[in-house]
Length: 314
Image (cartoon, rainbow, N blue to C red; front, side, top):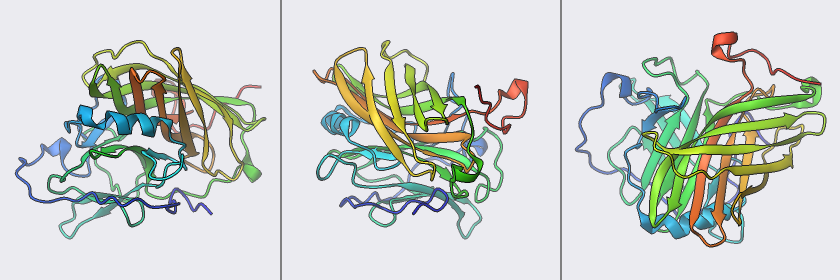
């Protein structure tokens, strides 16, 4: 049973992401732990941690496997057994004894990354958020998206979560009607020509609440600095969702032969926001993608309150 956006681990992997030793300089005020750094170019995402972490070419085989794995919720990673992703990850916000905001990333026991912290050993990790730079409210109660990427030499994963916990999703009593278009951002890993690059991309999803179905596209893949990464467009093929708000998943495709999967959850109890993960790998393994996304059916900021209700069409 789902309670808010807190998920139970559906299985486990023998992976521990740890922190040991630190020689990094103190972050600038607008990049301090818990707050968001400057917005990434042509994106509504800001780095929380590790945007500079290097994901080397040795992770490509695991990246391809993770892209084809079936998500169980909003985490997609290299499968440890069978064809399904073995774990769920969440991001929770708290304050340490000094009052500093800490993002705790965990899969309920087997993976735990306390943030901020010293450099991580044997793992690369990058976290992004939709928080507005320069503003640091009480993140222990202020809802915000967290998109994450992590990799070891043998495993790769991407996850999405919203922190803190929100109300249980239940469309049975207040279901939206008609269709709604969601737009947002994606961040992830792009593998091609023997190298791995962190990417940003644009999201568009269309939900049909009369048929309880959702699908869309991810395109405009580019590096964090805005350099285009080819012209590949990934289709998130239409899949159905449950009125209870449980996680759902579907297949992905592109304009080159290949395969992959995507998965998502509603981020609130009214269906205004959605987040999840997606992957795609070409059959010839010439290109592979794995990422997390967030999207909203909110009104544009320059045309109303971004928290306005979902706009529907008959």
